[in-house]
Length: 135
Length: 387
Ligand SMILES: [Zn+2]
Image 1 (cartoon, rainbow over the protein chains, first blue to last red):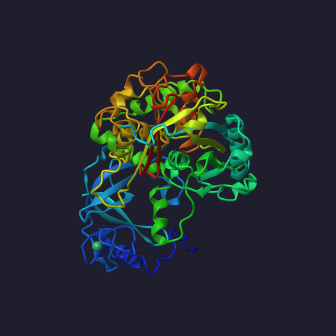
Image 2 (cartoon, rainbow over the protein chains, first blue to last red; image 1 turned 90 degrees about the vertical axis):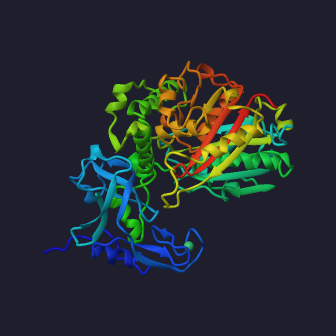
Image 3 (cartoon, helix red, strand yellow; image 1 turned 90 degrees about the horizontal axis):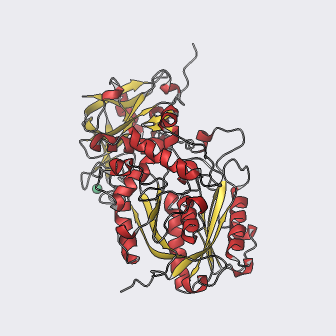
């Protein structure tokens, strides 16, 4: 059997904890050890206080929809048969905003402010993809 | 007391190349725009002693342009980048330079050639490959380039304030009416609501017709001191006021960046420099990468309350014959997309009174430039009259 092509390059040291966490169904983000601020995507230095004392930690995976839109043109194998694909910006309880997709929802009923929680999808080659679903 | 920069500088030259599927190097389009601006201003190449350069998405114009142009003795030369705010920024820095004697005639030029022969228009701005795993997630989700980010911003405005698809349509349709009167506009055929609705979705709530054109071309303007501009070939367009404001949510949820943009901090300071009020503005040239950008910018500029931008424009006041003529050349949606040079070039044409059939009242022209995803902003206040 032919192995499905990968959708993502292999994680590197900077983002491995994110992808390892996703495999286990967890949302892992960086957090500043000095001022406690969370950050996303990957940063070397805390945007709030400038510290480089940044560690990975489990986030709640809970948040609300900041805003949403519907992809109506496919240009990636993952979009195939899934239009309209619901694109969302999720404001996590941790104070960071994440660009992602909302699954298991009626695209017409998504609204700003809606509660959502993290979910994991798997690519044909087995990669874990972090998405969200209604809470 | 009048601000020392109010009417210290003026725009004395304008060069616009052919626009659209012009398959030439961006550097050469830039060079042509510069030569056109020099001729337009009635200057000789040897008069030019300053050059500010901005490149678009193709990023193919830079310092070597002055070698292509044979400008061997310059007193001001740099490459600048503030995305869609760059054109306004270049004019601001040029105005300060000529007012302080660094140079006499500074050319500000933008050129881009993202359209390749045989390639779809959408491919030009879709965004390049991303190397790492984190960045590679975005195309999986449908995030490519600026378009989805603006669609997301527009949807939030709809959710919060009841802004409708018809409001976005009114921007596209109204600007097309202006474009019909602009011989240089790419899209001049009439557009109605049915035509707008028939336009395919890209990222809903945006149809294709909510999005700017993609153009190859170049635009150059020449900035000089108000004193020099007074007796030149073209009527001077004075720089009465200007400001910039920049910001980003930086991935943090404490900013409502889709709704409250840096434009709100930029326009009041530009108007203060110009010693003018918003009610003195007789026309606007508003950066219109997407229909929503016009609505949110007019709100942030204070023409109406936050959230009421859709209703504000619904009566057609931005269209020909309306109370606030806006994007009178058709804008980036219907004329051509040269980043911030699209609104700037139309403002110069209008400021000179050279708008022909589309000429609007030009006493005070408010010009915006917007870059990133509502992140980087520049405002100009232009007028045929000095303070
Ligand atoms: Zn910190």
